[in-house]
Structure formats: structure tokens, C-alpha cells
Amino acid sequence: MKKIIYSILSLALSITAFAQGNVYKQEPTKFEGLAMTPPMGWNSWNTFATNIDEDLVKQTADIMVSSGMRDAGYTYIVLDDGWMTRERDENGNLVPDPKKFPSGMKALIDYVHSKGLKFGLYNCAGTKTCAGYPGTRGYEYQDARFYASLGIDFLKYDWCNTEGINATEAYTTMSNALKTAGRPILFSLCEWGDNQPWEWGEPLGNMWRISGDIYPCFDCEFKHPENWSSWGFMKIVDMRKGIRKYSGPDHWNDFDMMEVGNEMNDTEDKSHFSIWCMVASPLIAGNDFRSMSKETLEILTNKDMIAINQDKLGIQGFRYNSDNGLETWVKPLENGDWAIAFLNRSEEDKSINFNWKEHTIKDDIFNLETSFDSAAYDIYDVWNHKKSGTTKKAFKDKVASHDIVVLRLSKK
Image 1 (cartoon, one colour):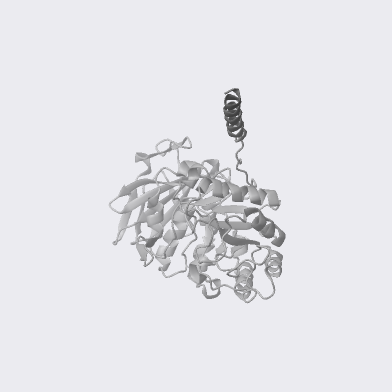
Image 2 (cartoon, one colour; image 1 turned 90 degrees about the vertical axis):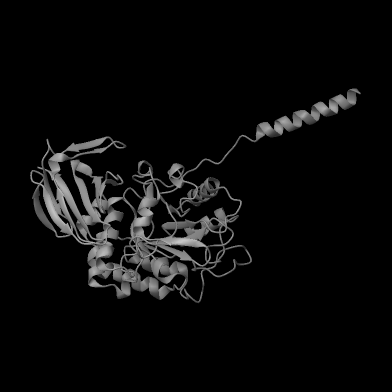
């Protein structure tokens, strides 16, 4: 009997000891300070999907320099899904597709770096990427060392084929793997907002997607045959409520790669770019630079609009008012400046008649406020590149359907 009691007691102590030993968990970490303003660059997916190769990358890099885009702030070239072969090698390593990249990925990255640009790659937290290439599940530390050895600067990490995986843990593992590999690599969480990454993403990554994929339209939903949807840019803007408090320097709400230059008209492209700047989204172009129009280039390189996006306060703007399809957006800026945008979401022209003295703008989240009744500002029209009076007088203008007027206010 004593032996039985002793055996039961020993077993209980063993189980207790095992349970007590399970006290460690991985703590999230990231390379700090890689994205103190929203990252700017180019991604291959929106236009090319998996039809990518080294000639495309080199041509894109060359145009980013010659067109002035690099000097405007666009520094990242990111290859999305489809850059690797369909299977890992015998050692479990990812293999850049030798047909698409005959000179080798390292040589291509060195070329991009020689242009004063940075380079990014894509993978996925699941067993396969969204296009069916090898995912990173189970290979996180091995893949991180591979990326570091190549010298990449940016990793977009997607969320396909992740059944049974905890999102926070999956992204924490990859974040820690990148940190352990030792090379500072900006970590872009592409989790689509399914598990509210804004609530847990700041210690892990530098930016996180808030939605599914964008689509080149103003305000539509595009339903794919596989039973998922892509979204017009205003659909994405409307999708999440109450998330702006989570965004700021080195931890940005990512509204997805831009569709400027892809199928929409120039007016809608201008509004799309303006709103991305107002909400402090990363500015990642997704068009074909080789066939880019003069108008598209002018939109993407508007230095005054970019300055609003890149403002060092890093505060995401918000919708202040909506009246019969005419929306007023505001964004606090450093040195007491404000950006004000009037967006016409309707199908007909609208008149703006904004009497400044009747408005007090409050940003309760970041504790900022201005009363135009007691403070006067100079007005600069960002898209027309001209001064436009002061806030002592009501602002009047017309704005066409789907068009936008953006003003920068500076204290007198």
C-alpha cells in the first residue's frame, strides 16, 4: 500500500514540476527605428503578380532614380510572391527562381543597392504562399538567416494557408527570427486585419496591413471566384474604426499598396494618393513605371503632399465631417500646422464653403486642438501649388466628383 501511495505521490509531483516548468514564452522584438515615417517604395504584386524577373527589377530601379522618385522618398523595391522555385532544396532552403533571376538574387540586390535604393522580399506565415510557393511555417529562423545573407532590407509577411496557427505567435516567431539573424530588416505584417494586428503588432513589426487586397477603383468591392474580395481604396478607408490611435512612428497602419496609375482616372488617382497621405499610410506604389504617364508621376511625386504623409509627428488623419457626399478630413502636423482635405465622394460636383470661424478642430486621441476663431492660419493649396489666403475668410471652391482639395494651414 505504501508503495502505491508513494508511486501516486511521485507521479503527481512529476506532473506538477512539468507544469511549473512551462513558464517561458517568446517575447516579441523587432529592429527599432527603421520606419520613423511611413515607408515609401514600390511593390510588384498589383501589376505583375508572379510575372516578375530581374529585368523588371533593374528597369524599375533605374526609373526610380531617373524619374526623381528616389529623391522624392521612394526607396524600397519589394518583390512580392513568386520569386522562388516551387520547392525548397534538399537542405530546406528557399531557392530564387533561376529562370526569372539568372544572375542570382544577391547580384540583383547589389544592383538595387548600388542605385541608392533598398530591397525587399515576400513570404508567408503558412505552409504555402498565396500563390502556392513555399511558405515559411517551420522554417522561420532558417529563412531569416537566408534573407540576412542576401542583404535584404524589407520583408512582407503574408497570411495565406495558416489554418490552425495563432497569428500573434506566428508573427512574433518571425520577428524574433529576423532579430536573431542580425540584419536590420523592416518587418511588414500582411495579416489583413483578421486578428486586429494593430492591437499587438507594435513590438513585432514596423507596419501592418489593416485589410484584404486593394483593387483599382474608388469605392467598389471586387468579388473573386474563389469567394474572397478585393476592395476599392475608399472601402479600405471605411473598413476599420478606432484604429488610428495605434499608428505612429515605427508602427504604421498599412492601407495597402497604392493603385495610382492602374485603371482609375487621374482625378481618382489624385484622391487615392491624397487620402493615403492623410491617413499616414506607407506609400508603396504598385504601377508599371515603364509605362507611367506624366500625370501619374506628378501625382506620386507631389512633394507637398508627400510632406504631409512624412510629417514627423506621425499622426494618422481622420474624417472630421461628412455632408451629403462632401467629406472633410484633417491631419495634425508638426509645428502646429494642419492638413485639411475636402473629398467629394458623390457623383456630382460639389461647392466648398468652409467658414473657419465656425469650426474648432479637436483630436481627442492625441490631445490637439485648434480654434479658427482665435487663431489665424495661412492657407496653401497643395495640388495647385499656390497660397490661397488665410483662415480669416471662408474658403470657397468647387470640387468635381471623386476629386479632392488639400490645404496646408500654417500659423501666421
